[in-house]
Image (cartoon, rainbow, N blue to C red; front, top):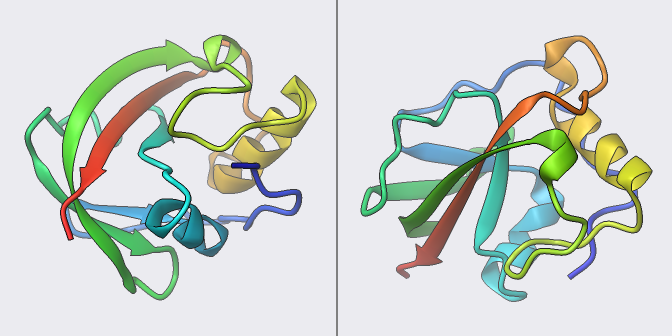
Length: 128
């Protein structure tokens, strides 16, 4: 499962219901058909989620339902510790590719993603 070459640019912090996690449109197929069951999230925006919580996975901008899911794991890391290849997540060609993708998804922070930036890894199982 390859990470996108030209990821969606997210200029504003997406606002959604508390138990909705938004994904860029190019990730919908990866979730529905290719086994994407992990997501990295900048900062602590989703830190309130706990293992066992039911969430709605929706497409960024359209809010179209991708799937419902149950949170199965939660882990804190820094950007520099994010692996290029992680089971259940799209793979990156290089650290530069990883930084480009994440900096696009988190454009709203007003700068490029830095090595010591905090990220939350959420694992999930689809339930429909």
